[in-house]
Image 1 (cartoon, rainbow, N blue to C red):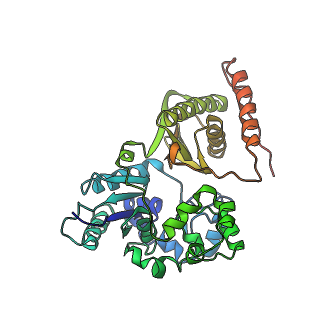
Image 2: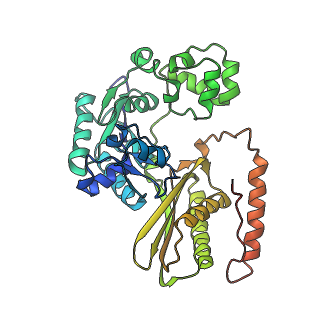
Image 3: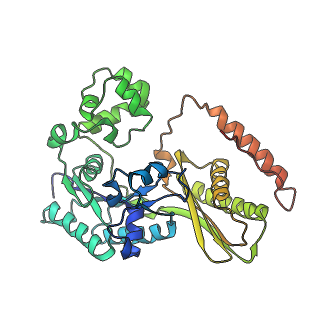
Length: 391
């Protein structure tokens, strides 16, 4: 038996865009982004052809088009992503049952026993080459003795890179990276750490005043410090293979829905079922998607990601309403769907509260939504809808 663990972190590169290119070969080598139709929105994903022009994920679409006028933008297509995600995870299961999905496009594998007498690099190359040749899915793979180092390693060479990161390599390979690259550090936390003079992971690892770190990281401080010194005791959890990569409900309407109020009421019922399933599974969601198919059988979808995970009906339904308002057209509706992805177990979550947005705000919004819901339930059609303040 090996004295050390061999953990793989396998990450699909530019996943949403890669799925589209795998499905439509004419999109290969074309600068491609996934995002909204109007330039006011932001890109969800940009492929590596687009990134050559400086285009990146989470960039305003107007800026992306300025940098790359030939950028082709496609809407989100969650059914397609779920199909290719299933191909991905089904293939990984042929190597080991000690696998833990981390999201729709990445997972951890404990390959300690599975690799036998082979070199880990040879096995990683086999996995990478098979996924690319069979499904046209590019991946990066990190190999390390624990999950954290494997995750950091997989981000070091993209696309199609394979990186081995040992504990003895931490100071040379990990510490020079910018603090923004530290897995698990929130975007809002990075500026606070920089105020302390922490620019790199090495600065963080050697920072002496832990009291100041705890002011921003709370009870996560010790865990982060262990990780940046190469220590991570978290185990691969195979039970997460059996949790849903996404949870969704949809409904086809034989006679079509013609009225906006009817469509919103149908979405409310679908959302209620999705949230109930999320809670029953002990999960929380970060990403909500709405799908609509009109009488002309054209499909459209949009998604929204919260800055945190939630299982609150009113928060989820507010996102659903806003997404549907963006999708709404005066056409009869044949199908509606609501899905939740980017799921995590509630017991594993640590929700950082924004000091500028007190908890009372959420409870006040929930109270208003609860009153509206109770009023609407007394009528055949929903009469009231919560308004939103425009800037």
